[in-house]
Length: 225
Length: 406
Ligand SMILES: Nc1ncnc2c1ncn2[C@@H]1O[C@H](COP(=O)(O)OP(=O)(O)OP(=O)(O)O)[C@@H](O)[C@H]1O
Ligand SMILES: [Mg+2]
Image (cartoon, rainbow over all chains, first blue to last red; front, side, top):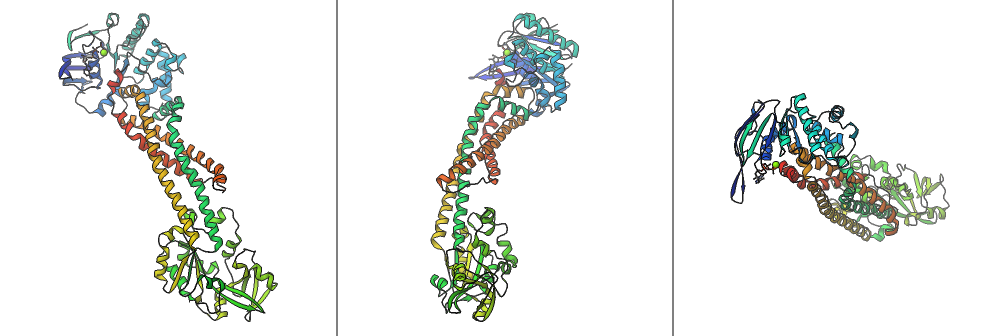
C-alpha cells in the first residue's frame, strides 16, 4: 500500500455556510495502481487531489503516504515530499511560458539541485520517450496542445516519482489526443510501476483505471476495480 | 537548469519590461554621478586657486595685521616657533599642511629685498604626527584639502607647489623670486651676500605674479640666526581642510596658540564652504529622492512581475519549490536589476558630466572610477529594498489558488 486516506473531512466556510468538500472519505491505493477519480462537478475531486498533494490542510482525518502520516507534518517536509516523490499533470498543462521544452522538463531536477549535465541527459531521454526529441528548443506556445501535455507528462516523471497526480489531464484535448495521452499514462504505469491517481470527467479515461473512485457531494459512492 | 538561469532567461525574454523597470533608478544614479563628477572637479579647482594663494589660514602674532605680513617691517611682531610643534603634537584634525615663515625686509647692497625664512618639507615631515595627519592618504578626502598630491594626480604642474614641495633647503642655500633676481641680476648657481652671509642661489623661481616674486627664500634657521630672532616666526601659514574650518578648526587652534591672531583667507574659504555644502545638500536630496522613487519604481515593477507570474509561482510551489526559492527568484532578479541600473547610471552620469561639465560649469570633467562601485552598491540596495515586500507576498501565495486560475 502506498497511499491511504482515513476519514478525510475537508470543510470550506463560505458566507457563513459550511461546505463539506470531502465528507469522511476513506480509501486505499496500492503501489502500481492506476486510480481514476470521477464524479460530477463540485463533488470534491480536485479537493481530494490537493489534499493528497499536501497543498491544502484537512479539517480532520489522516493521510498515510509510504507508511508515514503526511497530514500533520510541516510545510517543509510536505514540500520535500512533493519535490521528490510526486509528479503532477494538470488540465492546463501548467508549463512555464518563457522556457523551452527541455528547460520546462528539467525544472523538477533543478529544484532537486541535480547537476546540469545529468539534467540535460535525463531530459533528453524522457523527451525521446514521449516523442518530442525534435521539439526540445520550442516554447510552449509554439507547440500543439497534445505536445504541451506530453511535455507536462515528461516533466511529471523525470524525477522518478512514486506517484503521479493528474487532474483532468485530457480535459483540454480532443478525443484522439486524449487517447494518446491516456496510452502514455498507461505505459508509464505499467513500465515504471508508477502509481497514478487521475481525476477525469471522461468515461473513456475512467476505463483506464485499475481502481475507480466515484465521488458525489464529497462522499465516495463507489469504489472498486 | 538552475534558479539563477531561470531568472536570466525570464529577464531576457521580457527585455522591454526590463527597460521600464530600470528607467527611474538608472536616471537617478546618473544624476547623482553627474553632479558628483562635476562638483569634485569644481571643488578641486577652488582648492587649487586657494593653494595658489599660499594658505587658507594665517596664524599671526597678536598685534600683527595682514599688512604686516606682506610688508614685513623691521619690528613686526613675531610668535614663538614652538607653536609649530604645538600644532603638530595636538590632536586637531584638518591641518593638511603648514609653513612657518619669518619675513623681514633687508638690504642687499643698496637694494631692499624681502628675506623669507621657510622650513623645507624634510624638516617638517620628519615628525611622525605630521605624516599621519598630513599629505599621505589625503588623496580621497581631498575634495577641499588642497595638497600637492591631489594636484599632481590631476596632472597639474604648479610651480608654486613645486617650491613648497622643496624637500631640502640646506643651510646657506636660497631661492630667489623672479623680480628680485632681475633687480639684483641674480642667476641660478650664483652667490649672494645677505647681511654678511654668503648664500648659494639654488634656483630662480618662475614668476607667480604674487609678492613671492619679490622675495628671497632661505632656510628658516639661517634667517632666524641672521636676523637675531631665534625661535621666532612672523607667521604660520596653514592649509586647513575647509570642512575642518567650518567645523571650528580656528577655535581649536586659538585654544592652543595663545596671543595669536588666527584668520582665514576669509571670503574664498567661505564661498568654497558654501559651494561644497550646497553640493552636498543637493546630492543628499537627490539620494533621498532616488531612494524612494527608484525603490518604489523597482518595487512596482517586481510586484507587476509577481502578479504576472502567479501561476508560475503556483506551478513551482506545487512541484516542490520552497518559499525560499521564490524569494531567491525575485531577489536575484532585483539584484541583477540593481547591478544593471548602477552600471548604466554610472555610464550615463559620467557621460553627462564629461559632456555638460565644460558647458555648465566651465570645467573639464574626468570619469571618477570609484563612483562605479558606489553606483552599483547604491542601486542594488535600492533595488533590493524596493523588492523585499512584493517578494515576501509572492512567497506567501497559496500554490493551489494560483493553479486554479485558468
Ligand atoms: N477555496 C475554496 N473555498 C470555498 N469552497 C471551495 C474552495 N475550493 C473548493 N470549494 C468547494 O468545494 C467543493 C468541491 O470542489 P472541487 O474543486 O473539489 O470540485 P471538483 O469535483 O474538482 O469539480 P470540477 O469537476 O468542476 O473540477 C465545491 O463545492 C467547491 O465550491
Ligand atoms: Mg476539479
